Length: 102
Image (cartoon, rainbow, N blue to C red):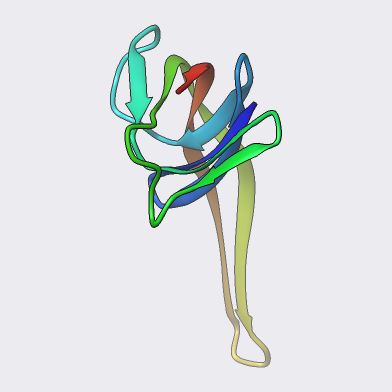
């Protein structure tokens, strides 16, 4: 059984006891979260597709920790002008354990 869930504008394919890295969510480590925007549910070959969401369906999970992603280097240069700019960025994520789909 799996579901397609919209979390903060991004779509994730989730299954029970799986963990995902979602964009940073509000809440402390150990808090439970519910995701109401379920776009699709597959229950052993029986597929429910929402228009746009499946009515009465929700996915619940637990926040494990807040982490940072890998560093991305942003490098800008204009040739022959002496302009060089180097910058780094680390995106913040929330690690979520999926508890149930229903």
